Image (cartoon, rainbow, N blue to C red; front, side, top):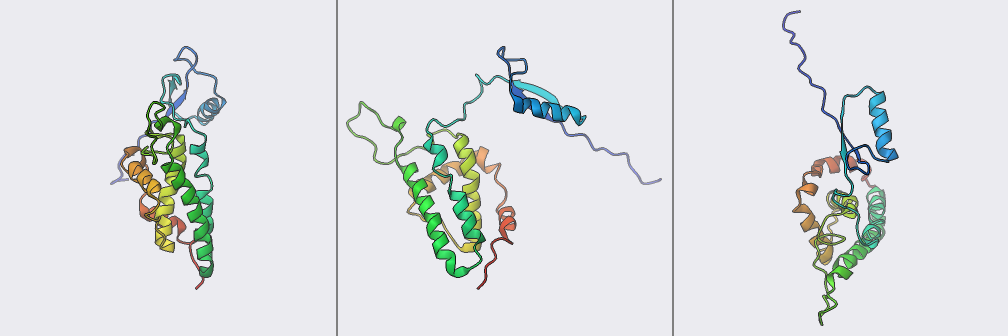
Length: 205
């Protein structure tokens, strides 16, 4: 048939990163990595395998357990708020959400032990750290920041809710996060978040 051109579609390049063994190069002992390895192989997918020496890889786990725990209820309170169908009940749901924001703000403004100099006569009264667990992004931030971004966008769009300016710790945290490419370049566009909540955010007058 005239007018047809051969397909120029190229199979995507897939790279599987797996834990390295004790020699730093061979495949290590990780059932999750092996599971993915087997599935790709069974499906006949073409892929490259790269082993990662975990002893040389950036350590992303937070030092303080509270860094993981402090925002654990925030998204649940937001979900209840955004899914509430009765306008007269908004204030109660908003109050619960604000309580969780206050908890997060208190944690972000309270200096961590690492920020306190035992040799100094003056202890810092307000934390100046950039993120939840210190000045480096950790797994705790990777868990909380995407949720905070969703809350900021969807709650404003559908409930006219702004994170109060008085929560200085939360806003410092957000500003520092938005300054990092690892966060901003992985965020969806605001309209994508708005579209996701368009139906669930409907309320009866």
